[in-house]
Length: 127
Image (cartoon, rainbow, N blue to C red; front, side):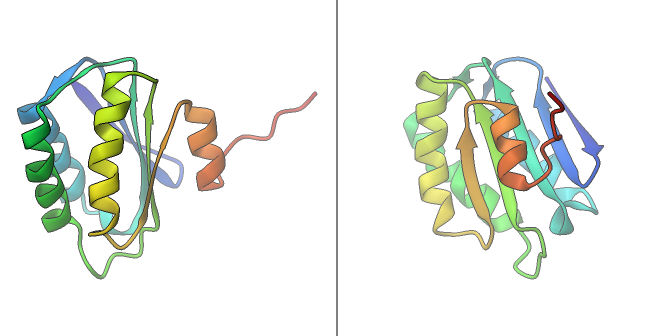
């Protein structure tokens, strides 16, 4: 389903398959309950996996995530990596609603490299 690993100074939530509403709720619960979550930026690597979500479930996802995000957190960014298509569009709707309710930045990217660059953790490439 997914893995969560600490990778340097960030958490990496790696989706291993497509997901539905119950699965995304489990991910939200799991990642926000980690002791390092309030102080560690994270990347959600969804890639090509499909979000099997209904539009009416998005508001519940917004509320779930908002309630689980500590107000006194020092974290500053969450990046979501999702390729183009319906899944990315659904996640954009979710992210737009969520941005108004959380204290850190949330952006969606098409590649892990761009997400890491935005977070300031991209590896320098040598020519």
